[in-house]
Every structure is written in C-alpha cells, then in structure tokens.
Length: 382
Image 1: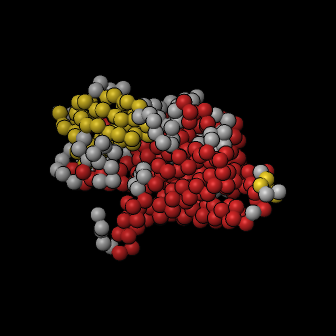
Image 2: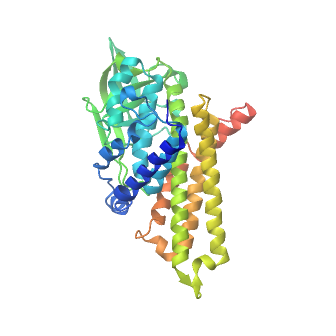
Image 3: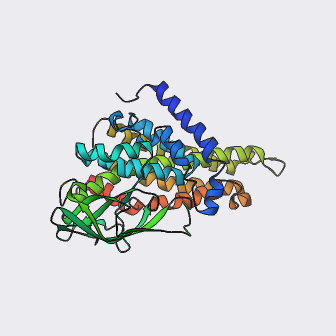
C-alpha cells in the first residue's frame, strides 16, 4: 500500500521542507557561484527516501503515491532546482524506467543502489545534433556475439559526471524511431568518458555533461526492453519526467511568491510598504494564481498516474504551463525586488536563471504544444 493517508504525506512533506531549509537553502547561492552542489547532499536525500520514492520496498524504495512525489519535488524545486534535478533524473528518468521496463533480474540488480543513493543514474538521449528530433539520434550499438558495442556522443546530460549508470539510447536498426534500443551502461566501462559542461546560465550547481562512448561493450542482459523499442521507452520516461519537472517548477514559482510577499512587506517606498502599492499587489496576485494553477495541472497528471491511466497529455500540459509560469513568476519577483533582485544575496535572480531552462529540456514548450495539439486533433504536425 502506498501512503495515501494525509497525515503520512504531511509528515514526509514537513521532513523534506525541514531538510531543504537546513541543508539546501543556506548553501544554494554558494553552489551556484562555484558551479557545484556538494555531493554530501546525496545521503540526506536517500535518508528521506527521496531517491526511491514510489518504488517498492523490496528494492529499498519508499512506497508513496504520485501526488506525494509531486509535493516533495515541489519542496526540492523551491529549495534549489539543481538538487531537485538529481532526484528527478536518477529516480524519475532512470530508476522508474528500469522499474517499468526492466526484467525482475534487472530491477534487482540496479534499483537497490539507486534507492539507497549508492549509485546515481542519468538519462542519455540528447545528442549534439539531435535535440527535439530524438527519433533521428545517431549513437549506434552493434551486436558482437552476446554483447553490444556502443559508440556515440550525448550532450546536456544531467548527473552526467556523477552517475554510475547511464540509460543510453542508441540505434540498432534502420533510420527513425523504430531502430532505437535502450541500454543500461555502467559509466566505469572502458571507452566511456564524461566531460562536465560549465558556464551555464542556470542550474549551475547541477552536474551536466557531455558523454563520449567509444566502443563501450555491454552484455545483452543490459538491454532494457525489446530491441527496437527504445524510442517508446524514452517517450514513456519523458512523460513521467515532465510531471516531476512540472512539480519542481511549481516549487520555483512558490519560492518566488514567498520571497516577493516577505520583501514587499518589509521594504518601504514612498512612505509605505511596497505591499501597499497596487501594482506590486497585482504582480504578487498573478504569481499566486498561476502557481496554484500549475500545481493543479501537475496533480491531475499525478492522479492519473496513481489510477494507472496514461499521463502523456496531462504531463505535457503540466510541464508546458508550469515551466512558463516559473519564468513569469521569477520575472515578476525580480520586478518586486527591483535592483536587489539582480544580486545573488536574494534568491529571485537564481530562480529566474534556473526556471529558464525548464522551457527547453525534456521537450521544449513548442514540442509540448505539438503533443497537446496532436492528442486533441488526431493529426501530427511533426
């Protein structure tokens, strides 16, 4: 049984909130400056059960429903999107995909380490020449007796330099979506190298990497799902990831709201608190309403997931709206703060920079609109 009782949910949410206030918020500006989250955060995330949330206890997971999962991703997003990304990728994109697509043996082999934080996962789909058009990826896996030999390059891979296991998508057959297969590749194998990408606009603390695979050999037992089914595996993973990302964006938006309210109450201009100015109240009201709307869309996807229904359409709606909302909320918060919002003593500038990429990765806002449009009309505009 998952945790459906509100009291359990609330206890877990408070525990995560306390952890974020104690272990994340005091350090986030420094992590942003040095472009490195402190890796000692991992045991803390694991200790709260965050790295195995929604996975069964037999693998060391923390049984919970997806609404709870979204609530906790919101708390992490409010704290620091770079930390939220560690969980969303290692658990959401890697762990949940191994659980949904893997054999009993594969689950038992890889999931306990993911849940305990002893190993981290990454999701290697995007390539230097292939972003939105994922069906045309060029990394290749060639059969050699009982093994596969994988060569290619992946880019913008979250957790890329931290991960012990990479979910790699490579072409095993003809052109297009039906020629792609998924493989779990240990990052310590010969021929596998990860190079950190630095100088990012936002998510600066998060380990983002370019991965080079030069004839990396894995046994056929590392193939995840059927040969030629990799594209479907990737798209199902991204639907789950979009829900997680949307929840994180709700957290960014909520962080912007809390920061704006407290600053507008404290700071005075024209002889009265900023909060007494109508146009400042308007910005705060807009952040509040859009944050609630984004959360509602995210929870619709979560409730569908808990009911065992398809979530792709709901997840695309949530991801599109929540990511764009996070950018708008951070922009408004920056306006409320004025010049002080532009320096990293306050969190709103970082919220804006971190929010901006959420409209790009795991499917751009434009891709989400095309997914939504296709679902509604039955006609693909791709």
